[in-house]
Length: 479
Image 1 (spheres, rainbow, N blue to C red):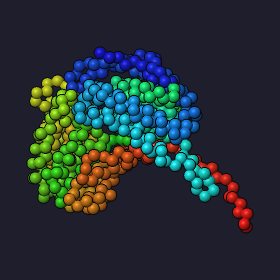
Image 2: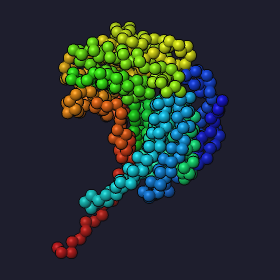
Image 3: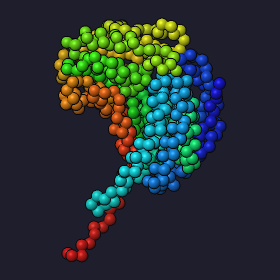
Image 4: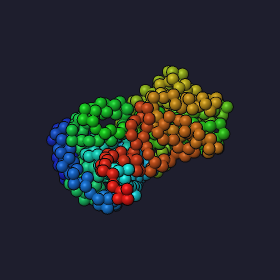
């Protein structure tokens, strides 16, 4: 059994000053696999000080120097991909296919960031002014438990590309995932203090990062409630804040769509990452006239999903993260039935043959109204709501009738029509006739799904501050 009791500060592992210890369970077996000693506010302050001291020199690095650093990180994360995959399966319960994708994605983040830096104009001329794109400064990167390694690397690649020293605070529920990633970072021989890692609770480490005057920027991924708290805490020091928050994403199947193709893709969108994903297409909007066929296909597709051991390549849905998340999903399944939704497949309890582990039954509700709790609140589990509509205009209105606006999906036989509908959805990101995202496109939400954008050039720019230096107009000797 492992024990994580160190922070990574100033280029070295150091024992934390915190004393509180928590157990980490394998969610597929409920067995204790390790312990974490939580970092304290004092540990966070040491990490912030290290990043603050490193920032001036790192902020002056050249494009070539940062590209070389990002390439070293790409190689180091590639070398650690198997370790990242294995600990993601053990500690989070991610199905092996998903865990492998995340492990590969970690290295891809740094490759993409290197390309973005190489082609980016950090200085431009506007009239008589030089416009400089300068690093914003020390940045706090806060990653969620449902995607520790991937989110951590995505944020870090953008921050380093821009020239920002960082303090990373991953969820305390994924300490070994964060530690393995940090071991790869250490292998890449970064300048001391440029990257620091502290694993502690939000009310301690997170609050210190949110209020410290030495932290210029916060990039947070997690729940809307926590994001609002971070934004309030950050305002006194006027930090730059980006928030990737909760979602209740619609999948709009138009009346001309090929349901045989669209429905399995919609199921994949709903149950991606075992349903524990902010981008999950958890509301499926289907034309009334085609509902019977859609429900038959849904029942067939969902019944074929394999729930179980995340190490088995045949598994598509692993366990929920912990007991609390399991209980949350069970609550919403009960609530759906209480409010009159019709259970198509799934339901309460564990799947047959899985007496242990935080496994839930993939669940589909039909005859859902948009005012039901299961249609309005983020469940964060494999629960899909099917809502009927009569006209395209009604579908768009229903899709937008939510406090969230992170993601959306549209399926149609007419690509141009699908794009017109996608343009009318109040969401930061919409996928048309696909469920695989474009990872260089900007990612982020509107309404209560967040502020700011990540990924690609847009992600790097979120760590840059625009500055202008105007000089006297040039004298024209011919006048």
